[in-house]
Length: 289
Image (cartoon, rainbow, N blue to C red; front, side, top):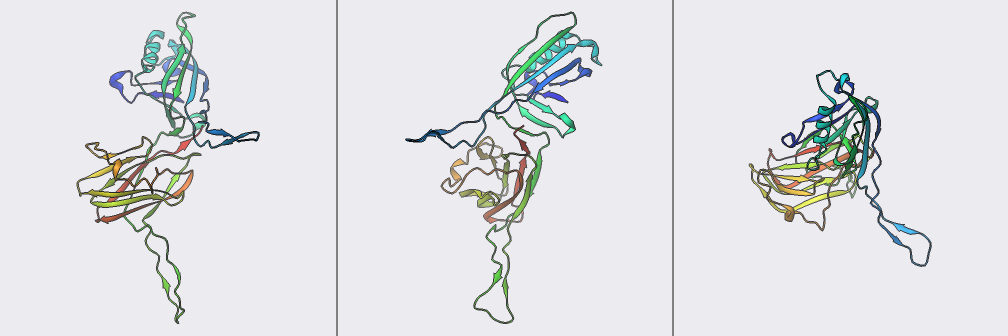
């Protein structure tokens, strides 16, 4: 199934479901493939290029379908169907396209209109093509995953024998990790959003699986304050006021934390905290197709 959903219905139609019940029969859906953001240098005095590419860019998406209003379960006309679809093609909008082909759980991607063709070729029916650009290029799960993690040291394990050996032998204890398994069921990295709830003095958020971390220095939150870290939109701000806290990150020791495909271990390590300090996590699984 294919459907469009408008996140800002005050600016246009709420959405549209592509199917016979809506008076539409899809003949072709082409999800395209994201362009590669090519980064490469010529190799001096040698054939070939040194390629440093790491990221995708945008992709093009096309849907071909026939409108035949009598199919619709509700009274409608070809013109009304076209009005709804062209309303969702407003360049101001960034609707989401949801797909669940092959009965998989819904995936979605954000769109901006690129073009289309809507000829009036026969009475009551038209063969239509609509195309969009998906700026982020990556599909994500329709369902938002959420979880929370409490403070922990997140330090390296200190298990093992102590020396010099004494009898009976003693072993050091493992420091608590403050770690929580996070599973990205997709095939490409996804970028989460975090909300750090105070009280909290400084903090490090780390994916110990990938080795990434974000280290806050000079951050002081009261029990009524929280900081939002949006890794996808590259924003760090106070919840409720959107005052930036970008300057509280030590960027010499930090980078944006993402979740790689498969299992990731997330650690949250504040310097000062209480029993109500916590880190909320929200993310969507991500796919390249």
